[in-house]
Length: 126
Image (cartoon, rainbow, N blue to C red; front, side):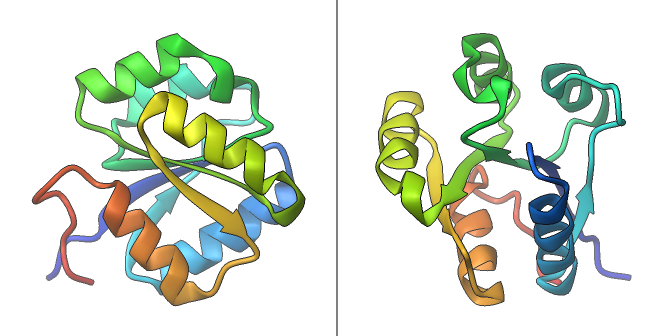
């Protein structure tokens, strides 16, 4: 049995969250969502995913504690946002030294972006 890469989706939009969850699953990852009342940092501490897709509009996107924890534990972070927020996503990704993705996205573009956000050697084949 092939191991699937655990990727957490943290989103402000339930519709986008469902879309990304489905795309990640189809791309061969094992997507996971935080609990309904769970804060992003608490969820990442509990689950310890290989990577996190983080909505640029989510409060965790401006949390140095979140990015520090992810960096210290080798968790890849990919900041994403809708097309109109592309400049904001670019700035945030550059400031935090993480990957970026602008939505909408094809399945292959998402898979490539997730792979690029992973620490070396963490991505397993689907």
